[in-house]
Image (cartoon, rainbow, N blue to C red):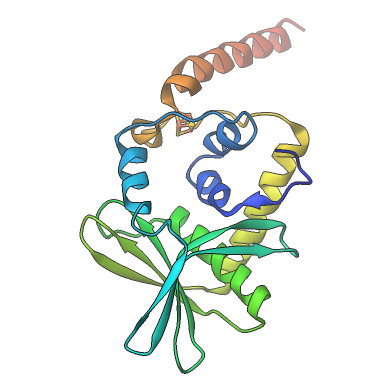
Length: 206
Ligand code: SF4
């Protein structure tokens, strides 16, 4: 993937979770399954066949392709509800229990912004469906989320242009990350620290 290719909507979520995870996946095409990615894939199997159904007058589209020329984003929505009153409502499926995660909300906001551009109407709300607890969490697509989508997409694009992996987070996020073995956050962080200490030492000697 290069800086001129459209950015996958999933990259917004990866970057918001950990910029290095985003770089490993979208710059270096690294991927490794763990229990969390396996659960995520199982959940997405529920909605990865394109098609639609009618539920109480609401048209529910599955696996709907999405894009934004303005933001250079591409991807798909797990579900989009089209209500008779004109309301358009995207729903993103995630494994795990109902809890607020800003990286999920950014991905949903990216979908809403694509739908707004494609359909020419506002998409002020959407939801995350948490498969383990089978509950929806409604998310208001606020101006702050719009702004976060724009700055995150710009940050990803500049990482791709520079072709450099961001430094490791090396914190509690790494425990659930499927890329831990490839990333080696402790080893890289320790090497960076030693390098910085050496630079400090040279500064003192000068
Ligand atoms: S192991 Fe940690 S630093 Fe490395 S990609 Fe995963 S979350 Fe980021």
